[in-house]
Image 1 (cartoon, rainbow, N blue to C red):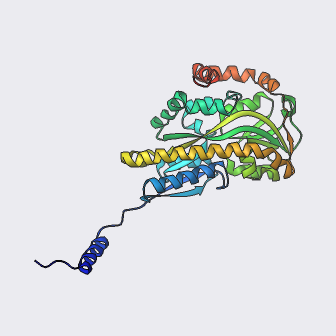
Image 2 (cartoon, rainbow, N blue to C red; image 1 turned 45 degrees about the vertical axis):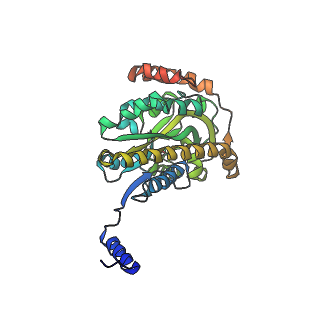
Length: 325
Ligand code: EAX
């Protein structure tokens, strides 16, 4: 029998390679409301890098910006995109149980918030997404929200009275600002800057990472570090896409989600450290000392309402969380 020459062998392999279908590559889309150079962008890029590496390029991640978070959640629900990173602002309209997370002054600091969301409570709340036609993949972070406006410095609840404040499409936030005597106007993030430029609203509230990433210093003069709400974000997936993944690929996407959470939180921490100085450099008047106790006292009627309206036991579990508990 004739021994095949090396050339014949390589020829056969090349033919076989040409015949074998290239490993099919699937492109998945993830959106978020903020630019790539932001705490959401840091998360989505870490997600992209890990998905493409862990699936040997069988999946490619396409990152897009959609600054209407409610629309992005709907698109993920119906499957015109596979993933979105969104604040919990509009999520309560889809998964009511999540609304408790937006109660003002519920979280003491980042350790408290991250500890609760990374623990059993966080998992319990992620599981509430499934019956609503969404997959809650992982808790990410937007940050502690602070008040900005173009009218006056704010240090006490009295300073908020009568201000027209843009809020997210979130009934918990709207009730809080109504209770403080402000005039809350809910709108999508996509409408915020024009509304501030045209004076439709006087102010808005967002974490320092959002104010920095979107140059809100260009349309707002005063920033007060009210830290009145810890704003979680969440990575959501389309159920049909997620359930179609085999176990190995789903594990790869979950691993990538962990990388996204770490990159996102690290960026929030960095932005919090540099934010005040940077925004002062950009011309904002920043008030770091705010009468938090007075804000909490002024919100007492709202807290009573939240306890009646939502799961009071869950609110207490969150409030009483301690490291290691
Ligand atoms: O999630 O709408 C908001 O103010 C959010 O903080 C922003 O879209 C980032």
